[in-house]
Structures are given as C-alpha cells and as structure tokens.
Length: 257
Ligand code: SF4
Image (cartoon, rainbow, N blue to C red; front, side, top):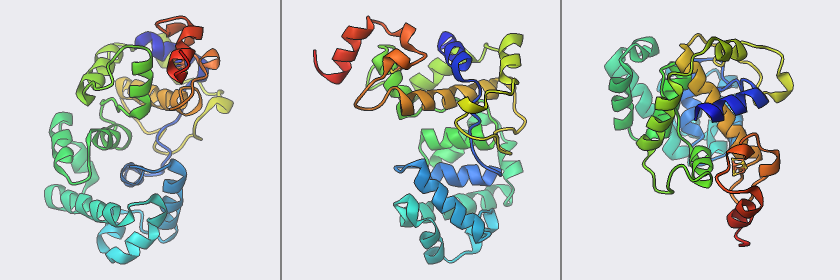
C-alpha cells in the first residue's frame, strides 16, 4: 500500500478531498452521497446553501417536508432528510449541539457512537471522522475494494475492517520528509480532483493527510481507469503492480478469457 501511495501521489499529487466549506457540509455530503453520484449531491448542497440551511440549526429547525424538497436531487430524499435530523438530534443530545465537542472525543469512541446511528455504515462514519473531524481513519469504498480485488490482494468478501486495517497498518508509518514535502507542494492544478477548499486545506495530522490523499487518489483510479466493467490499465499509475501480465489481466477482467 505504501508503494501504491507513492506511485499515485507521484502521478497526480494531492486531490483535495473533501470539497466543502465547513465541517457540517462534509457531514451532510457524506449522508447525501449514499447511493447517488456526487453531481446530484452538489445540487442538493447548493440548494441548502442558497436557503442558508446548511447548518445544524438549519437542519434542526426546517420543516421536514421543506428539507426533503431541498435535497430531492440526491435520491432517497425522505430517508436522507430523516437521517440528517437524527444526526443533529445526536449532536444536540450528546454534545450540546457542538461539533467541536463531538470531534474532540477519542476516535474509536466516536466511531462507535456514529455507527449506532440510523443510516451510518462504516464508510459514512469514517468519511465523517476523516474528512470532517480530521481523525486518522482510512475510508474504504467500492473503488478501494475493486482495485484490491483486481490486484488479488483481498477477496471479494473481505470485511470492511480487514481492508481498513490493511491501509492503516501500511500507511500510518509513511511520514518521511519527502512525502510530507510532496504533499505540501502546490502546482499540480491540472491533476486536481477538486479545487482546494476550506475543508481540504484544514489542519490535520500527517497521518490523516496521507489517508485523505490516498482515498482521493483511489477515487480517481476508480473513476477514470478501474471502471466497473472496463479497465484502462495501460494508462493507470498502478499498472506495474498488476499480479499477472497486462494482456492476460485485461482479458480476465473483461470476461474474454
Ligand atoms: S485499471 Fe488496471 S492497473 Fe489500474 S487499478 Fe485497475 S486493474 Fe489495476
């Protein structure tokens, strides 16, 4: 995983995840992105922002039907509106309505609490912890699984936690001055997934930064090279890590062999 990180970072640099202005915007985005594309989420976030409701109090005080209408583009809007309300009630009840107090909890404790909430699975919990709270937790998504399976590193049914620990064990020690210097380099604008934002530039530990970067880089591989039904290995920075020669591999993935 360290070699993968180096190869991807060398190719594309920092990806500037998560594109958001505030911690709460990241959280709302993490809920809304479930089962839909980011483009649909952006529409919902823009509407909430324009209505000045992209805040804890906005979600808390807006009639549910109005909230549902504003986030309609993200799909499953009734369910998602109710879940956002559940999250705000959780912050209110347990942390007096303060995200700062919530995020000051130990990582494992807060992760456990988030996973207890309706509508929060491991990927959403870890996205909130890493991208909103700057906790050092690696986010495992469908792109991550796909790449690892195609490289024969994990099996299709590998548990979420197994994959998370694999990345965390490998990357937590990757803090050489070279890597940190590379991370801080500006000037790879054409390779960015997102423009720098208040949240992508938020202060975080070097471990959290590496997890942040690695997940963003994996998303880029999954979106542009390692697609669900097609692979473009010859242009992918991870090509040299393929476990079998490229021609045989392509045939196997595309089902031609
Ligand atoms: S596109 Fe090919 S080289 Fe890149 S991650 Fe997928 S299988 Fe590996």
